[in-house]
Image (cartoon, rainbow, N blue to C red; front, side, top):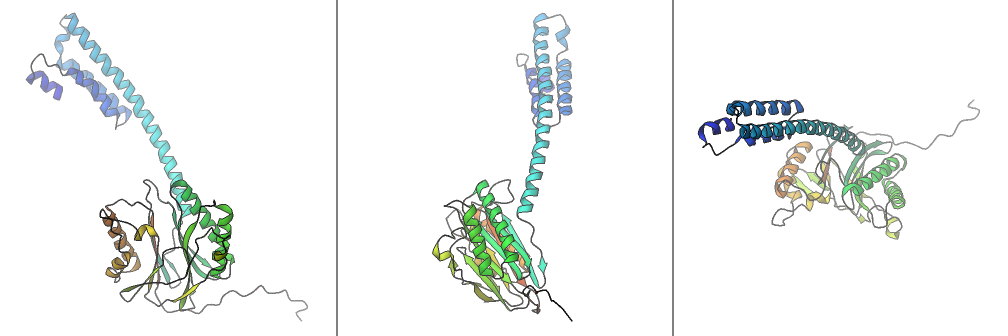
Length: 353
């Protein structure tokens, strides 16, 4: 339309017809090959309709028109090839992304919303663009010894951090089902990571054991920020002895990990979090006040509370996190139930009579 209008309104010396060469090139950048071909055809038709005098016998005019038409045709053909190649690469990228998403979901499996009287909610934000996971990790397992929860943060970023997170989750999933005490779970995970990680690698973590028949929970801190306990509209810090991070099993201080007993009442919310939440800064360098935000939204259920905290976190940092951020909330929603923990293996009976 611009070229046709220029034919009527622009002075004769201002020739806009060469602009038609760009039409199929622009269309090829975003649309399918058949649309590029259609755009090239429209450009050629427009060239002919706007300059009918090229067939009047003027050789110079005819030569100029043939050059522009040939350029339009070449650009159209090249644009069709580019569009086809782009669609092929997009399809390949989509397949790769689908595989990556499946792998990420296998690594960080969705936590159950409820196990018995315990409810769970999790929110995770990876700092890396186009990534669902990073160096933070979490897991909730129903084991013969109770419900065992892990939230951790590996040293470093990028693919190496994802690899360390996968190793940590694998070690925890194996130890959580076999070790009879939470302290032993921490020791086994520590020794496993010590064999697998580099000399400068480590993982900070906090583990929690919940038993439906008990009014207390066990908390094991491994160099990780202390959990927060929301009770009756107030927020307090769970004081647990901070042991060494996981992966430092060769150090003497890592051999004996102490477990803290914490009362857990119906209506309480225990929040496990990584330092990507509490150390998030705004433009003035102010840290995100997690405990105060929890107190403001303490009247909400755990999921709504995490949603509000996550929105506040993103608003605080201007929408872009510099570090991975993970939060996992545990709630107790009803009266305690008595359960029997697994006993030792029975010896076979001889001569039962």
